[in-house]
Length: 318
Image (cartoon, rainbow, N blue to C red; front, side, top):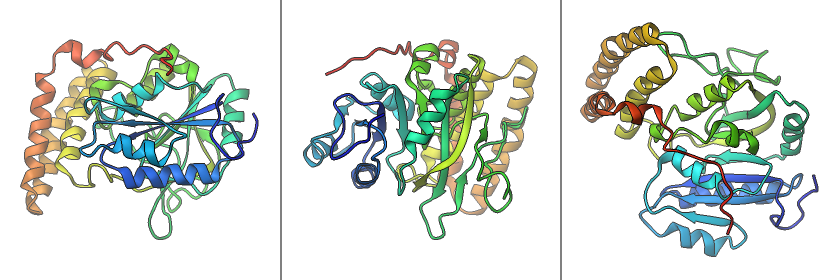
């Protein structure tokens, strides 16, 4: 790997893919931090604009003539936007970064070397910290989703002092920052697009594991995340997709009886508890969003729950 000097490479080893949706300022901060910091590997930057309300595609092209901007004619969601970016990527490795992230250090060559030397390893996520005072840890590896409740947690510095500073296997990558071998997309396909938003990286990680590959957490690189800038921490969109997609994940990744108990828990314990909490805080709009998420899941046809919209990896080029 040759070090980058002053510009992105015509023959990139790494393809950075990010999805922009009405997030021009955040996307610019992410690109600036990456371009200013990363010198250890040749790379290209691909921004997929998910049909922003303003013409942010042209704004990005004018500000950064050295990047590739892909304009989608409709909002494809997180998975669909990243999948579109994959089809234009030329690198041996794909780095998926949320547009509301930034970096302050460059250890990507170390992470890539790890993937190069370990044939059993398909991808990894770095240490992710919240972009707020003190930079508390958001992600340092995950525990597995529980069998019936689909609950898990991310390791953090306060509770898991011995867990957050050492590379280790983890069941899932974190969608805010994922480094993956390009060949994996040819094997298992892209991110499952039926989720649109939330849970797709969990499902994708499971598919990678089923194909016989491992996933790891590696703290030698840190990414700083301004979480939920595009949807809001307590937005109706988030409540809707979290409810809908937990049901969808259970359907796709649990056997019949485990799925049955998952559905009982989600529909008759988790959802009512969330709605009661929303009610107590006067967030009636979040109750409506949760109920619509449940309703829209059951309106999905079987094929829509199982297919990945026929994603096929192939390089489109210019």
